[in-house]
Image (cartoon, rainbow, N blue to C red; front, top):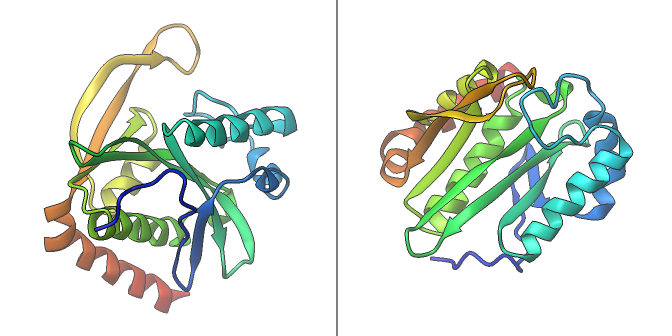
Length: 205
């Protein structure tokens, strides 16, 4: 069992993907992805354009320093390119819980199996190395793609936060869907299910 340490540079990788701590040097290789028009539709904190992306990355790195978040940059080994970002946050040592989110990938990396590789590595790290009991997720209620992606890796819907954030058009409020996966679900079914999906996707490629 490892102690989750915000000061440790964790690197999670397999034959397809590498997750490593986000650094300022990653701004340049992520910029073209960050400029994709549809990327920030359901994300309140925008990272499009050099100024916004720099502010976005600086904020994530600063939050790691304050032990609030742990941001990873995602590198696709098959394409030899940076693909996007993801974060761990709201870690509780006492409750043995953590949240996973702020995840985005460039258009060329979606639907390729990359996300499933990332989630496998993160779930394995959280449940088997850190021995935490629960991972929480959230998504804008209209973000059907994100909700489907979470469901496909074994997450369960558990509730809705009503009127939690401003609506996309800025004229009202919107709901957030809450999802989670538990350690016993990972050990008893989700891990094997995800391994099979990774094998099937690998053969297809």
